[in-house]
Length: 113
Image 1: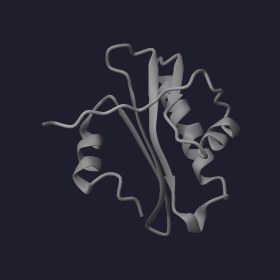
Image 2: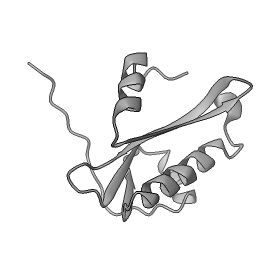
Image 3: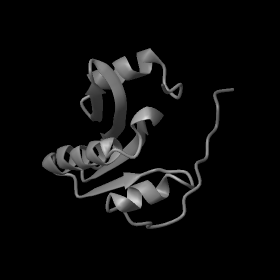
Image 4: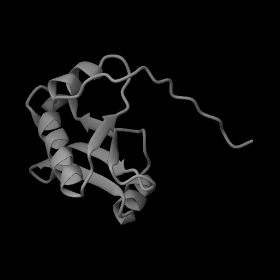
């Protein structure tokens, strides 16, 4: 349902101890996930990188429950702050999950030349 990451990306994430990767399922089908990580250089912070829910299951609380569980896991590991990198639009979803805007960030990227 999501082409942002390859299957190998997900498999690699599951082996990384800093990654928090949660999946929601229904009838042996994946209907959503939250993927993020504890910042390894500063274990007091974590980042939600992506939360996706299949559109057939949207607005049923799946995403909210995934984020809430992510927070439980991260705070359980001693994290003090959890950040979410979001585009315009999904920010309202995270605000409903208790997040507050703390600044305006621009995603910048350089590709391997």
